[in-house]
Amino acid sequence: MIRHILVTLVLLATFVQNTVAETTFTLIPPRNVIAGNKFSVTFRLKNGEASGIKAPQLDGCTLLFGPTTSMMQNYSWVNGKEERSTTVDYSFTYRADKAGTVTIPEITVTSGRTNYSSRPGTFNILPPDQASPSGGGGASSGDTRQSGRPINANDVLIRIILNKSHAYEQEAILCTIKLYTKHSISSFIPTVQPAFDGFLIEEVPVSPTLNEVEHYNGQNYMTAVLKQCIIYPQKSGKLTINSGKYDVTVVQYERVGGFWGGNQRVERDIKTSSNSASINITPLPQPQPEGFSGAVGRFSIDSKLRTSVFKTNEAASLVYTIKGTGNIKYIKEPVIDFPSEFEQYQPQSDINTHISGANMTGTQVIDYTFVPQSVGKFTIGADKFVYFNPESKEYVTLTTPSYNISVGQGAAVASSASVNKQSISSKNTDILHIKLGDLDLSHRHVYFYNSWWYWPGYVILTLLLVGMILVYSKRLRLNADIQGRRLAKAGKVAKKRLKLAGQYLKNRDNDRFYEEMLRAIWGYLGDKLRLPASQLTRENVAQELSGYGASDELIAQFLKVIDSCEMARYSPESSGSESEELYRMATNAMDGLENTRSHAAHK
Image (cartoon, rainbow, N blue to C red; front, side, top):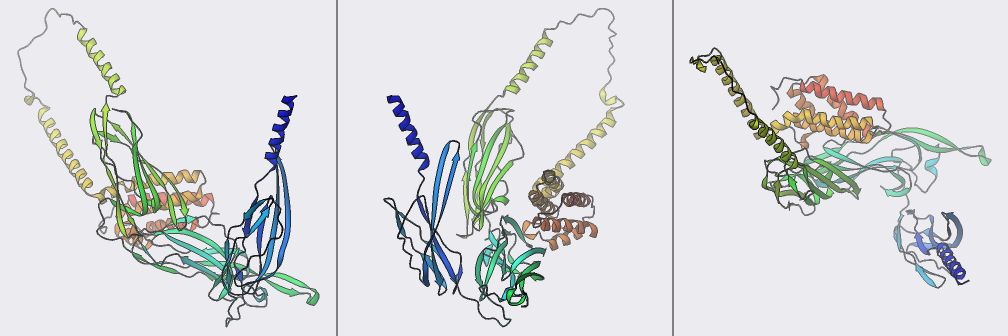
C-alpha cells in the first residue's frame, strides 16, 4: 500500500513539473515611426495572468487608448511530456508628435505573487517628408503610389555606404549597398555591379527585405540592404567604388470604376544607378618591422607540438594557431625555423571565420608536419608574428617559444639495419672452395690511362662537372632572388589552386569555386608578373601582360575570366556549363602565358 502511494506521489510531481512553464514579461517595441502617425507598444506576458497594467509615459508621444489585450494558448505532447503555454499581449496606441529617439521605460506587473519587469527599449520618430520642387510625396502620404504621378529620381535610390572615410591598407571597411524606395518593388535586376578595383572582398550574407523606414535627405523611405561586404584595400591613395546600374519594376495603383470602384495594380519599369563612393587609404607606417607579412587588425598566437616522443623517419607535427579580428583570411603562413636535419612537408591550413560587426573574426590553424632524419638533440626556433593595429596605429610583435627536442632511433631504421647486419653475417660465414689447375695467370699489366675509354671518359666527366656547377649557380641565384622563385613556382601554384577550384566545381559549390578561381588568377598573375597585391588591378595586369609579350587575345582571356568571376559572385543563378567554360578558359590562359617566350619588355 505504501509503495502504491509513493508511486502516485512521484507521478503527480512529474506531471506538475511537466505542466508548469516559466513566466516571462517582455517588451515588443515598434519600428521607426514617422511624426504624425500612430503606432503601438506591446508588452507580452507568457504563462501568467495580470491586471491593471499602466501605460508608460513616452516623451514626444500622446497616449490615445489602451491597453487592448489578445490571448493565445498552445498545447503539445511530445515523447510523453505535456507542455502548455499561454501568451497575453497588452498593446497601447500612441501618436508620434515630434521627431527624436524615444525610450520606453520598464514597467512591472504582478502575476500570482511574483513581480515581473520588462526591459527598457528604444525607437526613433522620424520627421515628416519635406516638400520638394519635384512634388515628391512622403512615405506617409499616398500620392507616390498613384499611377498618374510620374516616378522621379528621388523616389527610388541605390546608395553605396561606407562605414569609414579614412582607413589603412588592409584595414577592414564595411560596404553596404542599400535600396531606398517610396514604392513597392516587384522586380529588381542588377545589370552592372559596382566595381571594387583595389580591394579584396568578403561577402556578408543578407536577406533583402523592405522592412525598415529611414529618413534620408529630407524624405522618408522604405529601405532594404541589397548587398553587404567587408572590403580590404590593397593599396594607398584615393580608391573609388564605381556605381552600379539596375532595372527596377515599381508598383503603382490607378483608380478604376469611379466612386464605387477600387485601385488597380500597375507596374512600371525604370532604370536607376547607384552613387560612387570614395575613401582615402593611408599607407602602412614605414619602416615595417622584420617579420611583418601584411596582417592588420588585432591578433593572438599560440603554438604547440602534438608529438611528445620523436624518432627518426616518424612524422611529427607543430600546430600554429592565429586568432583575432582583421584580415585573418589573407594572412600568409609563417615560416618556421626547423633544423636542416628535418624533412618538411607542405603546411596544411584550416581557416574558420565569421563576420563580427564591421570586421571579420576567426581562427587560422596551420599544421606543420616534419620528419626527423638524424638522431640527436635539436631546436625548433622561436617565431615572430608581427601585425599592425589600426586603432593604436602601431606594429605589435608576438613571439612563440622555441622547442628543444631529443630524437631517438626510429623502428623502421632499426629494422633495416638488422636486415643488413644479417645479410653481412651470412656472407662472411660462407666458405669458398680452392680452385686447382691452370689459373691462366699473367704478369702483363695495362694501366687504365692507356685504355681506349680513358680520354673520352675524362671529357664526359669534365662536361658533367661544368653542368653541375652551372645548375648549382642558377639555384643559388634563384634562392637569393625571392621574385625569381615566385616566378618559377607561379605555374605550379596556379595549377594547384585551379585543381582546388575544380573540386568545388565538381561539387557544385559555386561560391567557393568563383572565390578560389579569383585567388588562383590574381595569385598567379602577381607571381608571374612580379606585382605586389597592392598593384593587382585590371589596368596594371593588362599593361604588364602586354610588356611580358602576351598577345591581345591572351590578355582579353585573362580579363574576361576576372570579370566573369567577379560578376558570377553576385549572380548565384549562373549555370554549371558557364562555370566549366570559365574553368577551361582560365586553364588555357595560364597555359598560353607559360608558352609565351618574349620577356624583353618584362621588368
